[in-house]
Image (cartoon, rainbow, N blue to C red; front, top):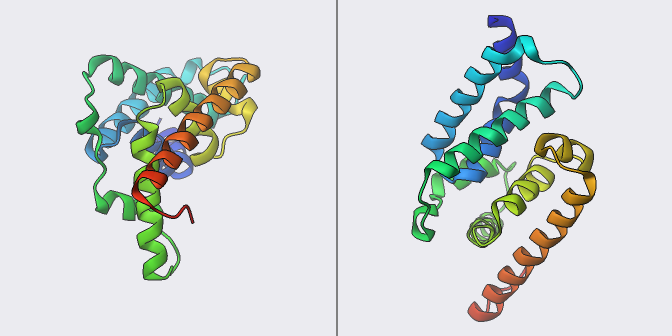
Length: 177
């Protein structure tokens, strides 16, 4: 079991943490949920049938853990702020110019804020597709959906996100660089 845990940790820990962080927007909570995912993986690994990749199976478990957490929460719009240290941790850019960092941080924070107006399903698809770089097929496997549903949800989520971000850019006179 130790070998299984170590392999999963080495291969997927960063992506798993990022996925859960993007969903719950809280570093400590994401860390707790990652631990919960690993516990579930270790408890059920002997039942893994290999019909999907281990990564897809792991993220499917993470999705269920995140959804369970959402169900237990009474989320409010003001409880979803992201702090600057966490943004810097997630960006990890290789020596960008200071003004690039400022613009990037601003755009990413805006994107996070606007994603809060997407449905949970739209947010799941956007995070898996664009942040975790899952394919349509992998995303469908993780979510237990058809590829068609993933594509439709992705399209609608991007439309909502783009519209909200453009609205903010226009309202605040920001440039969409």
